[in-house]
Length: 371
Ligand SMILES: [Zn+2]
Image (tube, rainbow, N blue to C red; front, side):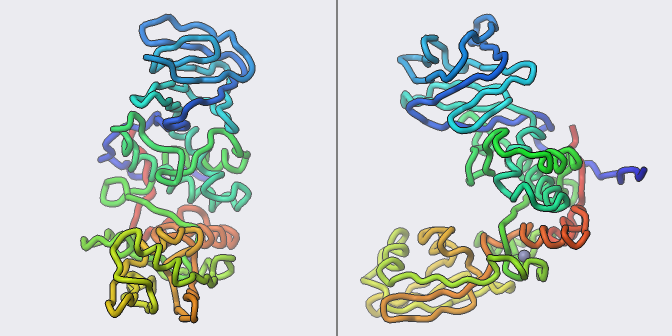
């Protein structure tokens, strides 16, 4: 048996390891809850009792509190699954404690409180294909765990740690968790990426298209980027389906997209590539509207057109047509940090997750959360 390598402790973590609070329903008019197994109910200032109800229960706001089927509840009531019980909420299923909250605007929010490791099992299948090679999933697990600790509390002013959507990480409870995902989380338990004794601020994306990019350049900051977040050349994602793409946008759609953020004198008639960063990602486009040339940030234009439509700003060339523009590019996502398709290929070629992480985050240290 090989002994696990001794890992450096990341000492400067602001919060201790343990639990995390995720908003699984946010400002909704109602939610459907279906307990499965023994669930306890704890109202603030009240006794903890067994929830007698079975089947689907409608949760709704009422004046000053909440209504669960026929039960009148106070805000902040907790539903606590015991002995392996679970609670279905809409199409998903959860095993953590659910906190039911009345919002100021007479809507309701449901927050799940659970251990970080359990949470990660519910993130992984929605951020990477759960049937991909184990070492790629382990690399993803470490990055997702690091992201979780680095961003825990980001939504504290809203009363929880993280959202369950792309503003944080996609999370759908136990839905879609398989043995591969459980193994990836279990075999990397507590491991995070560190940099100079602190948690590294990590990012990941589907495919870099041949080179990842500098975090500073991607987010438009002017500060120096830490070494692990500088771009690397990546030959590993060359066979990815995102490697090469073309997309067409009509002038009218481009005009509308740019007008979301700035005043234009008139419709756009011409567009060319302005500045690129060292990794080949377009940072600005120059567009002409009624005799005026306007500089447009490529990332903003991508956001307005739809990040799923224009898959990345790693654009090689543009082709101006009478009614619009064809963009020829490669990759999918912002291009910072871990390239998932590259990680997959490296795992297929026998590299382990530690080596994959070193490749995308050079100089970073595989570390343990200091509990
Ligand atoms: Zn790549």
